[in-house]
Length: 356
Image 1 (tube, rainbow, N blue to C red):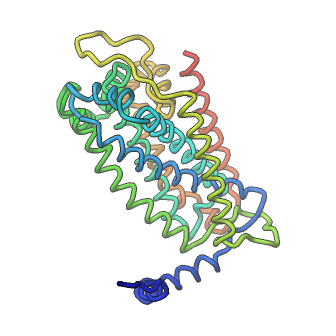
Image 2: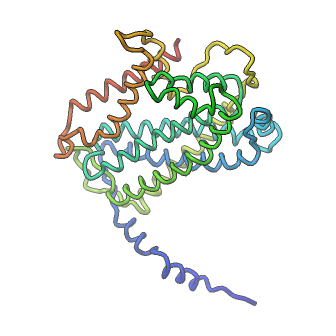
Image 3: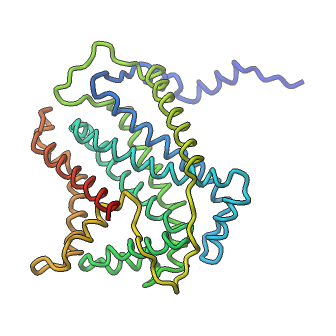
């Protein structure tokens, strides 16, 4: 009888993979403890919800058919015929929203703790890029059920870049695959959602995690550490896994109690129903476009709003190079006040959009 010695197999892998070096690094790494330590968990939660997205997304791909004639019916089949299909789809949709929410919280906490200061500029830039990719997931995945709300919300969403000077029309045609939303649009959104964005996200997530392990966890400026920092492995990892378990139970509970619904099938000949709004993470832009007048002096109001939001995203990326005081490990009250005003504005516009 053929016998495999487990110790020999383990030794074979240890001699060919840098397991000992990795374990030495993980056990020597320390996570600082202070009054803001709780915010560290949101980065791990974002990673957890992304993993859930990947797993449930693969399961949904087995049955989904990305054509206007079959997309809606395939979603109905998943929800009504596939065993636990409704739960997988509901979990996928809720995890997407929670992933975006935890990423927003993580980015905001990093901003106010000035964790983007040298030498962590690339960590901040990769995090902002991840935010853009995650928002891309939300936008491209919204059309896939091919129901009324998804169809007309995507129609409105793809028209927004149209007002941008010079490149706006080209961006709209690139997203739609033509002048109107149709089969080409669904194919492009599906390809972006299941191939392009996941590959880009995996690459940036890998870079972000590598930089996090290399530089370690940042401590807020002029924050007093506690004497007993936490060893990353196994102490902090066990705490992180406990948070993941709580998040998983909460996600399943929400997915079962409030299953993600499906509206009527999209009909391009029907007029758009009233009350069409994008998902909550696009509401600040949507509400701003609603309240801004068509013309502001000599400028087109919609184009001006799009340019301002685009410029804000660029400023967010280059923030570590703008905030000179952070290089000297000093607090920058002005940057924090501006950030707080913008945050209040975004939250306010989201609330107003729901109330409208």
